[in-house]
Image (cartoon, rainbow, N blue to C red; front, side, top):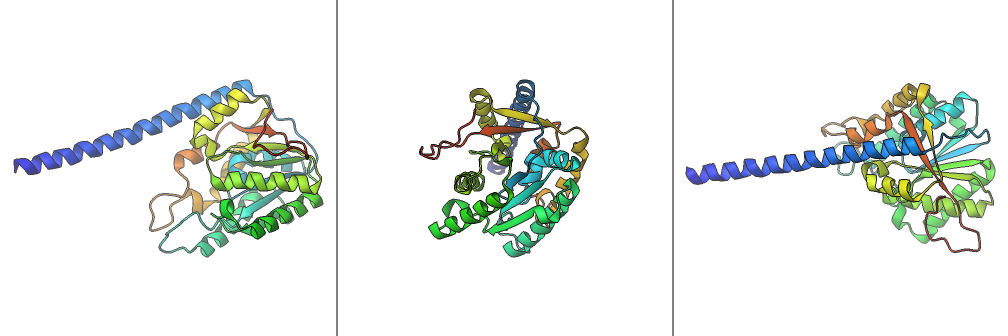
Length: 287
C-alpha cells in the first residue's frame, strides 16, 4: 500500500511539474510578445499608403489575413488594387486526421480563403491559387521548383505591383522561408522592382525572431488596425478549419493564443531590399 501511494504521489508530482513548466513557458512567451509589440509600436513609423497595385503572397490560406488583414481591408476600402496569391493548397494542416483527407482540407481552405477575402474586399478575380502541395516547399524537385517560380514570375509580370507583402524569412516555418526564396527569384526574373515588405506570422510565436529584427533593422512600418480591426476579425473567423477544433480533435490547428496575437491594434512589416542582379543572394537583407 505504501509503495502504491509513493507511486501515485510521484505521478501526480511529475504531472504538476509538467503543467507548471508549460504554464511558465506560456507566461514567458506572452511577456516576450507584449514587450515586442510595445517596442515595435513605439519605435516604428506608420505605413504610408501606396496607390499602385499590391500583391500579398501567402504560403497557406490564412497567412494573408493573419499578417496583412487590416492592410488589405484599408487598401480595398480606398478602392486600390490588391491581389492575393496562395502558394500551397493548404492540405497538410491536419496530418493524421481520422475523418478529413488532405484533399478535403485543401477544398475547405480554398472556400474559406474566398470567404475571408470577400470580407476584406478583395475581388474574386484577384485571388490566385497556385496549389503547390502543402508541406513540400522546402524539398521540391528542381523541375517542380522551376515551374512554381515561373508561375509566380508570370503573375508579377502581368500585375507589375508597386508593393509585395510576403512572410518573414526566417519566420519559424520552412514553408514560409521557402516561399520567400521563390518570390525573390521570381521578382528578379520578372524585371519588376516593387517595394518588398515582410510580415510576421510564426515569428510572433518565437519572439526572439522579432527582437532580432527590432534591434538590427530600421526599415519597418506599422499599420494601425483602427476601424478595420472588426473586419479582420470577421475574416479570420472564416478560417474555421484553422481556428476551431475539427471533430473528433478537441484542439484547433492554430493555437488560440497565436490567433489572439493578430486580433490587435497594429500590424507590422519589415522592408527587404533585393541584392543587385549581379550579386549572389546571401539571405534576407533589411534596411
